[in-house]
Image 1 (cartoon, rainbow, N blue to C red):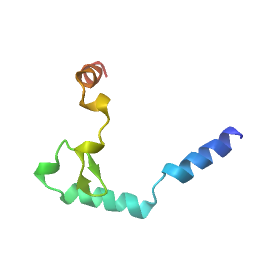
Image 2: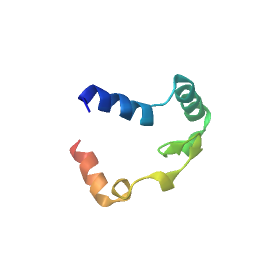
Image 3: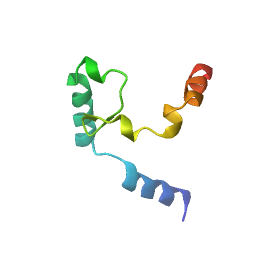
Length: 66
């Protein structure tokens, strides 16, 4: 596969439509204070979807470096 073909395939698998993106933005805007700093999936707070790295102390260290 050519690099452009790979990119097109990844976009097909992972990209969202503008309709889906707009819903995510509206959901985040109206979610309220309890959602601040939380991870949201499909307009719901979903901290279980976070990777083990994000939950680890190493992520805090990486965050400071960045």
